[in-house]
Length: 264
Image (cartoon, rainbow, N blue to C red; front, side, top):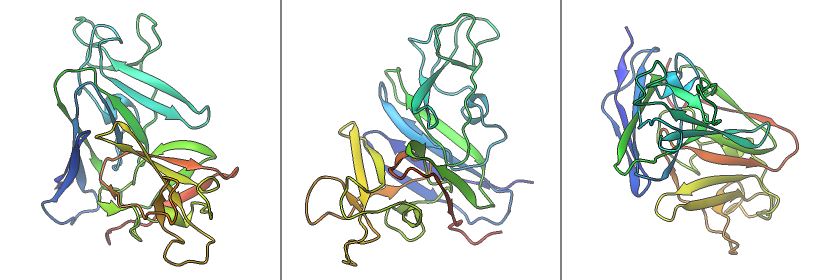
């Protein structure tokens, strides 16, 4: 029997994240859950920190959020394709009295709507676009990863998240993406992490300082705000939190972060 791990993370666009660990993990097939608060009429950047039965939205999201009789009134899931560097949007049909209700479809203005074809893997990030005037909860669940999760980081932008349901500071040794990122002595040459600012509804980019010979800066993520000396970033990466990785190197690389817990 799978053991439920009640990992609850309240993720709000205008409020801080919160995490509660209610009990320790004792089973390889542990099941985890994050509860994400979706603010009304806004974008929320989320990710999948679990292993799910399928990679489609009907498996990962299911019959959650608010659908509509047309794509213009439905909440949407928006996924970035790193190969084409473009977005695909999906909407949930609701209230039509047809077999389409409660399921996700591609937002391509075709009727009858085409079924969704998303591929949400562990560690992949995506947007939730609320078109609802009320706050909603989104629950993402699945098996807690028992194997190392590898994420390919191609040239350009990719939506990702930390692939394990734990809370870490961006400069924590366990959040070791800086081991595969390419740092530099200036922000224009460094790979970047780009986080979403809930209050300002804007991005917060970070760059990896390297090669300066100053151990205070080298190997750490700093705010990309054109100040010198750079300011070390203080951002907590929460379970289910999405962010961008921007790779400025022409070669892709795999990020296989070790599990931050000792089992199995």
